[in-house]
Image (cartoon, rainbow, N blue to C red; front, side, top):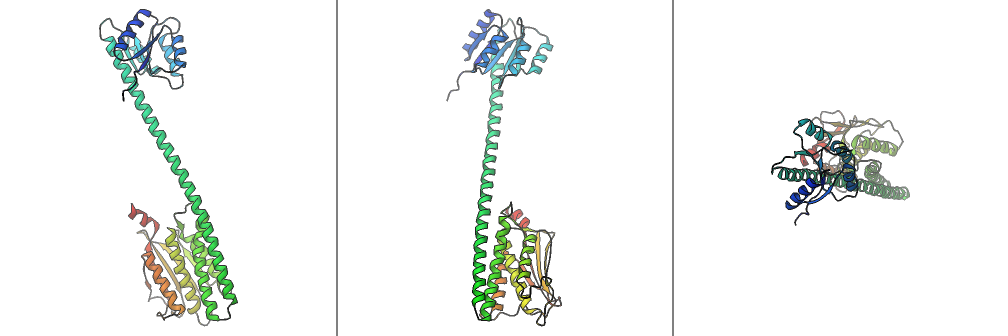
Length: 361
């Protein structure tokens, strides 16, 4: 596609020379208008449609430098090539400082028009490049704004989804609790109570995501704090001093938080049932960040060391062990029992959010 001809305004108080310049530039493909004063040139520029200006230095009344300053004060002014008949470099320097894109010295030879034509072309090319750069920057800003708006909308939708999921899980937990209360069988009551706590462990994650600005990560230490408080409240005698938490700041993705929450729930419930047959004792949950970006989780007690017995078919104890093993597999965790501990100590070593993000990069 052929670009339209450049429309040039030539400002010079010499009508004869202006006419010669007009004809010479038009032969080179320009569209040229002429005016004989700076005031007339400014008036023409305010009507728009001019791509570049050639401006003479010596003019009565308002000279070229004054006119140049006025042009530069216009909104989105066209480039100005300053034309002077003097060889004094001070005039050219003053024009460039005032904002001229280039300058050409009028001579009696044949080189003036080719030089002026080249200067106008180069000035317009610089304008095109500047405008293309500004347009690209504006497109980048618009794309960034669109992305930020979409990200904010997605985060809002995700928070709303987590809010609804959390509410639904709380309803399920409440129904399980009602069913447990209505059952005369202790085994059924115990099984339903365990199921209720597992559901609440998952619901706790969604409550965290609903109140967080970052729906992509969960502060695991804060999540475990809420989970441990729930487990304390669910203890049969309401003793809140049995379970303790010591956690360093750790971030993981929501799926990992759910898995960790289920593991902690199972191990704490097992400890509550089997660690202290003759009474209550300490159950400790410890979360620490390792230097290599991995996370170490430990659930321990000082009891008899029987809270994770060998699996028994169709037993609650066997179910708990299978759940812990399944969640450890989901976490891709190294897990085991610390035989040097006096009671029972189960540990899980798994990748934190930072290690997963770096490996993805």
